[in-house]
Length: 126
Image 1 (cartoon, rainbow, N blue to C red):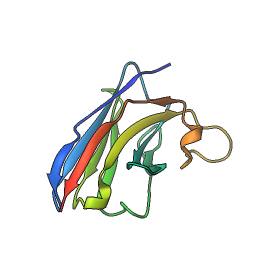
Image 2 (spheres, rainbow, N blue to C red):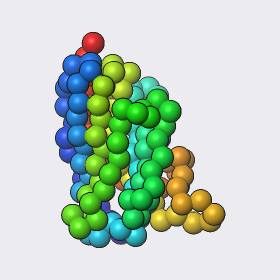
Image 3 (spheres, rainbow, N blue to C red):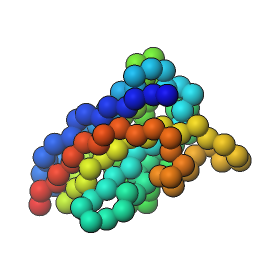
C-alpha cells in the first residue's frame, strides 16, 4: 500500500504555468502513475500517465503539447508540469497509482487505479 500526497496547486492567470508534485510514502517504482482532474459537477477525467520506468507517457488530447508528466523514482515523486494554462484547466488534480495487468501498461480509466492522493486545486483565471 502507498499513500500519495499532491502539492503545487494554486491560482494562476491564463497562459501561466504550474508544477504539481505527487510524493509517495514508499517506493512507487512498481506503479504506473497517472494524473486525473475533476471540475465541479463533472466526472474525474484522465490527464496523463507515465510508465514505471518513466520511459513511456500518454496524454489526454486536451493537454497534449502543454503538460508534461515525469517521475523521479529515487524520490518516489511524480510531477506534472503545466504550461500555457487555460481557464478550462481549472479543476482538482489527483495523482493515482496503478499496478497494471493484462496487455496494456496503462489505463485511462480511473477505476483501474488502486491508490489516490487527496487532490490539489488548480484555478486558472481569464
